[in-house]
Length: 484
Image (cartoon, rainbow, N blue to C red; front, side):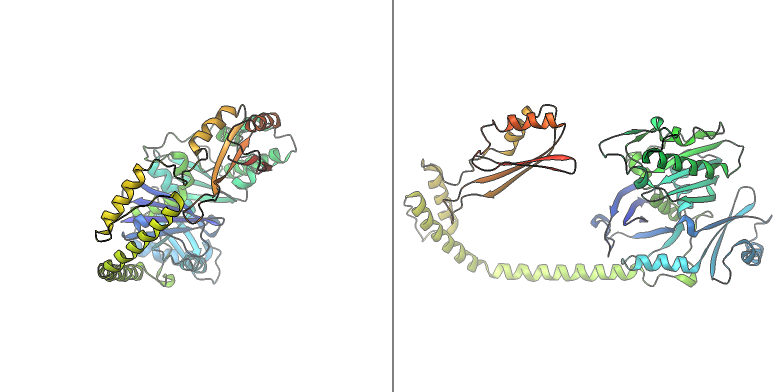
């Protein structure tokens, strides 16, 4: 059984594929607007698909009830829902989870929000087996890959938002969404540069300092609202590239009652990539565990309209038709061999005629022998021929070009190399010229690029008769020229 966790982040979907042993098998993004596609590797394997509700669609409440009897809990819960949760007359779903202290954590949402999540993925032809929530997924992720901590605070940074979750024994008791994400924080940073957050001056009013100071203040305010005097362990998940000292910058003013998570348990994938997929991985783990801490917001009153059994049937019929079509094609191919041999013989005769015109040689073949024997004899004749063949590629090969270009790049850096054959001689056009266009993309200072240009134009392989073009796009210098 394979488990697919799906999280929508902006216009993209983060998808994690886990085995029942919690091992990440596949992590990838899908930006399809119409249909989510699963890897062909897992197409015909049994699978369960799970997603979750966003943090702002979930309300978490602590509920004290000193009993574990389900009948008493359910009765008390039904009486308390209207007072504990502000859902009014809207149909709601509330899931009680028991804690170690014999209290309950109540996770509540409305039926309409669950139905919307189901519809959104059904439009992309995905039928769900389970719906959890983002805070619970972060708790599962932390518990699966790190040592257990009594109290923890997880900051999960995404493209357009940041999720803060406070956990007791890896159960979320509080969560909050900050409307600042990776795109806001990195908009002033070039992809090629690194930002040392220790150098941020919070007193300055430049855009970079302002957004990072605001982000830190929101994190601090959320953390201080916990009003907790015990030691809390901090974990930063999600992803934020090109920065250093992130933990130290965000939490340096909070106090001494914090520690940071230790090293993750052994993983078969780079942890920086794993933590970007923390939430979809957590969705999978919540379903795999299927214990008294698992959340399942798909209830009888909001079931998906489709199931995966229908997809398996479709896959079976498609496979059956494909096999049937292959058998029919094989029979047709077998019966048409004699017609193909006739076609090959006609092409061989035409080839001999064209070759005689171009190469001024005569090849006498016995048409009574098989086509393969004629082709072999024709091949031997061409190999023995000392006359030069007109179709040899006479331009410099890419591997030789790259070696020479790297010798003259100086302090500039070669970012890309594009080698494109625009025209070449063929049997039908034996007089056509070989025309190869090369486009280079480099980075460096103006002096570095000028030095490279001057050395390039001196090279023997540059066709000076054809125009060399220069441009500057996407922070890169583009140079296009033709080979001799």
